[in-house]
Length: 461
Image (cartoon, rainbow, N blue to C red; front, side, top):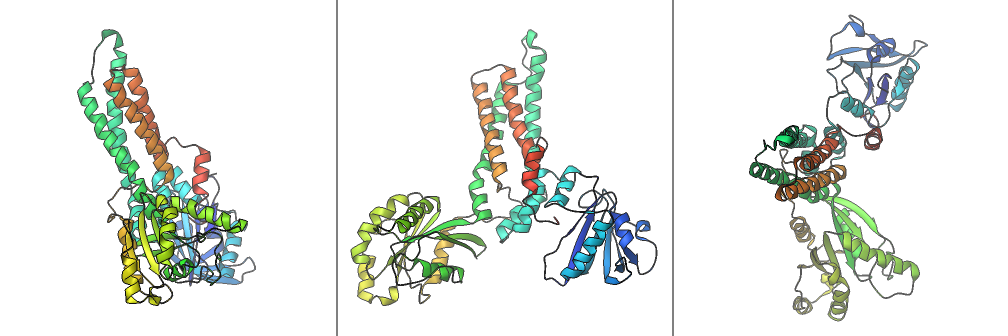
């Protein structure tokens, strides 16, 4: 695959400037065929990391565009190969004309993520760093940016390599004993090994447990908007996302399926889920929607229970019996909606209902009343720590699964040390732990796994 020279448009449509990346053993040669410098030496005679101004013309001699070409000689490039980047005007016509010329002269179109895959295969970065490139491109808030930047710069990799070094030291002492098994000697002090195993277990366990924070930061904190029909759930969703995402109607049962959207509040991404109103119904489709309401409720970290203030005195108790059992372990925020229709006396009466769980807020989604207070409750309910670029937090499900297996292996090592098992059993479990750390770094990963990872990248990266 790396014998091919690849090209791709690396910039989004609609910009003033477009960039085409070329990488491979013939990158400079092929670019030189279609590019004429305005002055000076040919492209192949120029030094690495230089910019050259010139023209690209069609085979007929017609000028396509005046461009700048960046030249990178391997291994000092993103991919580790010879590479060029052609900067032209952002017209889709110009970009396609340049791409056609490159392909006609020996390039092929790059696959999604192929540049980063080549960087990994050529030793420019390990696999966890390569995966962080996609996360960095997709980052939507300051926290996801910081985590991706830390991982791409090797913060996570360095943590894993330090762990692996300690494990290798650990197993080398154990395996040295096996070489002298007939003499019944112990080179590895068992009490020191127990201490070391505990330290390693604490580090891996911390990384595993950090995934709950990392997943929330990366994918957004799931917030279920629930309540009876016509309580104002869809109006609230539209207000929160500042868009008409859900149909608003006085007719009961308008929302029959789950509607999702994300917003960023004070640097935190929330994934709001508007659900079907809870009520007794004979409508089969609406009943399926209500079933999905309770499924989404189980998946949510925060629950916004929207209550119609005008009927709450009579409806609250029966709804609480249906909803509260599903909210255990979640952040519950009760929203008495349509508060603009209440008299001060009625609002006081509602505040005396038996509200023993969660926070309570009176709002009017229609009149945009108390929405700032609601946003503050959501941010507080997220309970996310302040994240810096030095924090090592797991955000990738593949890394989480590998670390979980590594944690199981180190637990078996601890159990084996407690049971005074022989060194060969201990060594096997230690090496299994090392295997899963290497899997994250990409040192034992097969082609199928690599293909699955890189095909999720955008083309041009």
